[in-house]
Each structure stands twice: as C-alpha cells, then as structure tokens.
Image: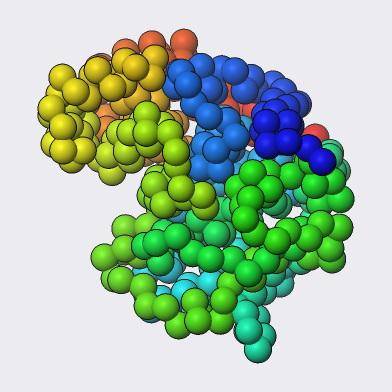
Length: 341
C-alpha cells in the first residue's frame, strides 16, 4: 500500500505532467507562494484553478467543449436560492449538466444516504484527455465536498466514496479523506452523505457570497481532516482574508486578531511575506478578470490600484508581459487548441 507521502508525491507528479503537456510549469505556479503544500486538497484545487486561468479553460482541456474561466463561480452563484444541502446538490448537478450538455451529474436519496453521482462514461472528453481524467474527476469529488462543507459551515461526515479510478495510488482521495471508506474501480464517481445531511439548512449569508475562493478557504479552514500545522493554518487565514477583499496589512491583521508586527513575523517564519501573499491573490484575480473582457480601468479599480498605470506596471512585474500581451497570448493559445480539436 502506498504511504501518504508517496500519494502526495504522485499528486504533484500528475499535476506537473498534466501542466507540462500544455506548456505550463507547476514550479512556476507554486514558486510565488513558498511553502505551499501541494498535497493539501484546497491547494490542489487552487493550483488547478491557476492552471485553468493559464490555459483559458476550466475543463483544463479535458473536455471537447472548453469552459470559460469563471464558469465555476457562475455555477456557485446559482445556489443563492437554495435552502437545504439536498437542494444545493440538486441545483449544482442541474447547473453542471446544463453547461456540459448532458445528464452527467445526478443526486439521489436512498434509505440511508444522500448521494451525489457523476457518471462520465458518455462525457465528450478531448482525445488527449485520457491519462488525466481519473485524477481530475477525483478532484471534482473533492470540490463538490468542499462546496457542501462550505454551505454547512462545519466539517461534514461522509459515509463512503466511490471512484472509477483504477489505481488507488494515483488518486488524491485517500489523502483528502483518510478516515472515509473509498471504493475504486467502480462504475461511477459518488459521494455518500448521511441522510440527515439532506435537510440541513443553509444560511442566506453564506450562499449569497459563495465563490471558488471562499470554497477553497473554507475547505482549508474546516478541512476534511483537522490541521495540525499551526503555521500552515495561519497562512491559510491570511490568504482567506486577502481573497475576501482585505488588501492592506492593518485590515488583514485586524481580521486575524493580531498586530501587524505579529502578522509579518509569522509570515516570515513560513518563508513568505505579506507582499508575496497579496501579489499571489491579486495576480490570480487580475488574470481571471482579464478573461471577462473588462477594461483595464475596471480591473485596476476592482483590485484597488490607484490608476491603470500602476496596475499595468504591477502585472508586468508579476508575469513579465503587459495585460494586453497576456490577453493576446492566451487568445492565440486558445485558438490553436480549438483548431487542433
């Protein structure tokens, strides 16, 4: 049986190979945030999101029909009218089925469980997607569970998990859910929740603001497994504050209940700084906003830059190209991929 460390190494290896196949370096995506734990479920999801922004496709080129960056946030926004976990799961399934054009997501109530099922056997995968499909569908299960966890506002128990993955050692599920029974080589991908979870009410304040950044932060805060690394937990809270829109050290420190000096010291202990953490979040938000065809003035304003010139200068420092050059590069890349299908 593979050890946890071996499984973590496999996750990184699969990510690196998948990204390299599209000309993207995993080391480049992780270098800006020193000490980032690749095997952590929330960080794996964040890395996949960064990858999606780079390739301009939230299906990560696995689907024959590309998805615009921001699709997941759009789906999450559709949960605002849901009142229970069952209702949210059904809306989630319906939204993704509408986007993908097929009944691939299903929600079922059995005598003892609420089941979220993904049946991808007829899904229109891209021709070159094969070797990465199982890993990414296991990651989709983690993402779905993260959404349920966020809506619940507390860690949520799972009865069992089913995966089509034929290699347990190639799956991130064992690391994410070490206490849950996981069956591999199954017909579909499934999450089984206690039936009592179905009618759990969702607070309006939570689902009104739901987006992927919040889901990742809540998954890392609440976890599938309680964190034992106090330093990692602090770094997660800093990132969560930044993703929530707090931009300066004073505001972030206040939200964490510490002084600015303590904030700086604890980040330094993790071989990073407030500036690095802030730039990581701003850069990812900037790239996502560029895909939405907003003007540079609008983007600069949303990210709290004093003017467009300051934003353009910062973006070039982060990426080595201007926002316009980046958008053009991604446009050409997207069309090369589309023409090759």
